[in-house]
Length: 349
Image 1 (cartoon, helix red, strand yellow):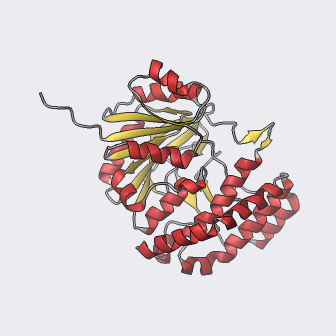
Image 2 (image 1 turned 180 degrees about the vertical axis):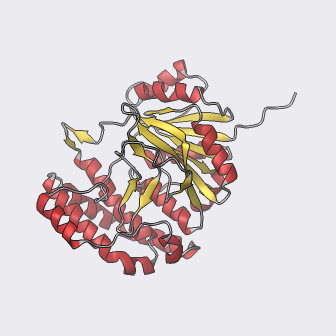
Image 3 (image 1 turned 90 degrees about the vertical axis):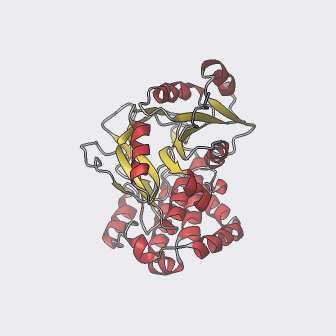
């Protein structure tokens, strides 16, 4: 009697105190039309009985039980290390997946041999005509953000196309790409680790494809706020990680050419942090970024030594937005940041 072939896909779901959300995402995985997959939940030291609940209610789901909350990046890395499949899907625990989600992503990577990842169309769970993201974009000012977030969905993102990087909350990756690019940077803990990985993949010549047929509905989370205000710790994470992102990955020519855009973005970030009462969090984030400089510069040397593409290739996919001093003055005067004006765009994990 021959053994059944191993699944082509491992679905890795990181979770921290997300027992109630798992009962949303796991049934939607059960309903997938594509069937060659296994599921691994990586529990980040939860205190809500997640591990026991999975053992009782979902015995077919693999579990990696971590003792403490090691962050999104480290949790998904443990799940990737646990898997042995050709493809690895990363899915947030607070998602409901359309039945065609996984199949559309697999079909795309089978067809797009130069892509390291395929990313889904994310819609808001409670307002299903509102976009939560259509792949991630990056601007040379170092602003990284989900395309279309907050827009009403009129089909403007219904074309399969190349994007800068995949949102790690709903994406499919090739294992061979992890072998070459490496895993997610665990020093990021959470926020922008997926964009950083996407940048490193770009520098090695890999692409990323947005797949509008792969639809997910994102519940979202209130963990980034405290009593209606931004949590200083969650505010600081993307502010710190944004600095590491461009220090690690921007080729020297790009730092020289676009450094003034980064500088203006940093000044605007500090200004708006002050308006939100988060100036001290912003400054602490930059201090943390500075403390990590020896390690980050070592990573930069390794990344740039392996780089296969230069500025011209990156200009094709990274957006250039020239300085508009009139708009900058309007922002400073009225304090109305445009969407994506700041690196601080926390995404609930």
